[in-house]
Amino acid sequence: MAQPLMLVTGGSRGIGAATVLLAASRGWHVAFSYKDNAEAANTVVAKAKSLGAEVIALQADVSNESDVVQLFETVEQKLGSISALINNAGMLEQQMRLDQMDLGRWQRVFSANVFGSFLCAKQAVMRMSTKHGGKGGVIVNVSSAASRLGSPNEFIDYAAAKGAVDSMTIGLAKELATEGIRVNAVRPGLIYTDIHASAGDPGRVDRVKTGVPMQRGGTAEEVAEAILWLASAQSSYVTGTLLDVTGGR
Image 1 (cartoon, rainbow, N blue to C red):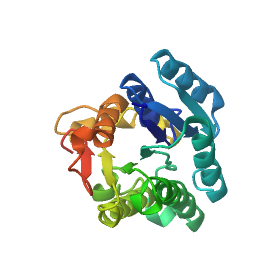
Image 2: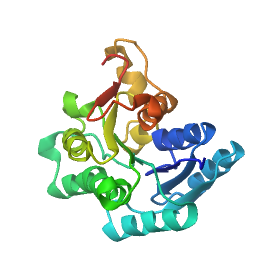
Image 3: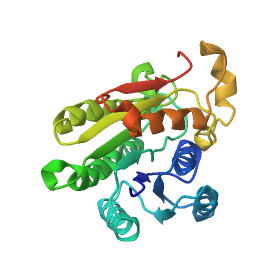
């Protein structure tokens, strides 16, 4: 039996990289996209190959439709048909109140987090849906607990974007339920990744972790475990679900 193929967007760091490596260790072949850090991507490729997986990294901006189409076509040419899409690529900007934000910021945040997830999901559906001659598969969207917490005084735009991802997850799951595709989302809470540094607050998790019932931040590997479960046959009756990985927050 051929090994299944997973495509992870934004796989060069953080939760994406942890997902690539965990999938590689569990018998998946993996393709992943990265936006601009080729050195980090190459490091992940080397680690995944050392686990016995066939893996490739491809540069792509998921908010650009032509990049996304090229990404999926190249993956097909090099590794074959995907059976799981992990919509992980995303970004946030500097912490501030909504009344300090401008429209350009909202457009950038929605382009990366919402439009990118839509564009990749569309390409995956066109390939995996039994309606289009596919063999079925899984889509896992990486959302955020921010979608229900709102991120006041920090990232209301990011929270709103992830709320859109949640809604898309639920609707798409219902749309594809008879076409062999399950669609779910994970909603990480305070996780130790460098996304906080990119927002200007590298120590954010330690600063606010006392607000988490478990009194600690989570790891990218813990989120990856949830993603891999949703991508596996062990969750075969799970679709349209938003799985919080938040330490109880």
